[in-house]
Length: 467
Image (cartoon, rainbow, N blue to C red; front, top):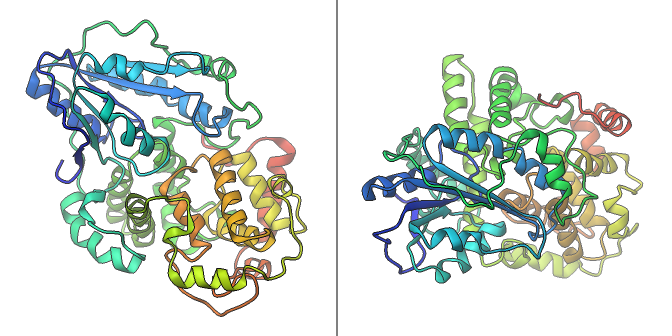
């Protein structure tokens, strides 16, 4: 656990506590979960069992059917795997704002210690800043999202080339299987009466009963949960890995892993993915360097950024050259100008851009290469840079299954110069990198992509969905 655990308050362990409470916020899985393993370690030292609490509130920003459904789809398997290990489990879906919002505190009253996930964005960042001071028992957070713990990189890094050597130096120490033990003492106490047992058949009705945005429908492409994450991983290593380096930037080839929603919601860990990919590549004499660069260096650069900046959603941390060039070109004429509503509905003159936005609306995810183009065009069609940034974040927060994530915010801010370099100056963009529709046509099969998205719209079904 070296470098993974932070204690966020000055309260002691409660010696007469009934259990160690693990609050599953972001790493919603049982396997390869350092936070759960730390809870087990503490529980074993005290001779008590472990109780896992998982909540789903109706009040997070842009709460909707898509995000709720994806998260609920993971719950039955989580419950099954916890029970197999002798760990207690209680799940609380807060359906309306009138329902109680104190379930964690209720459970913490009887806990010897509270352990949760260390995560630098979204609701976990807020909770970890506010909850510890309200407890009279030790509150610890554990980094189970990164391979090299965030704490091991002691300052903000400014590009992949600065963090890469530090990550590579530490990988031999941390790129190894996570602890995998069950608690010595089985949880045998009663679960609270407000616990809700979720089954696959009950999810739709449960979502419908929640006071959330029902206009954002579930993804037609992705089902949440541990088992689906494992299926995507093995489909990638067996069918796509050998094609990844050559075809990853060709959306119509479907050579990427599609694991970003599962990594964001913690259904699978980047550590598991890296070990599986590396092992398969070694066994089958494949090259996995390009994929591991994205999974480890680029992803952990995003976590490093989100950890060390005050506001991961703002221009405050983009390079000075980027802020200066945006200030210089703030008054440049934008023609055409689209409203946020027009862009949200994919109503622009550009068929390729419209298709990327429709992919977001239908699948809940845009292919990474086309997402860069998507962002650059929003910058070109918005009245100003701040309006463009706000719209990109809004669309991802509302529709993307891999939104609200460190990778999301750094990928969006990359459009505005974060982790990039100056380019040839031009209108609107200044020295920010420019991407054109003609360039996309030269580099990718845009016709095949347009046909694919049209099929999704016409049928409401995705032939590439993993079942």
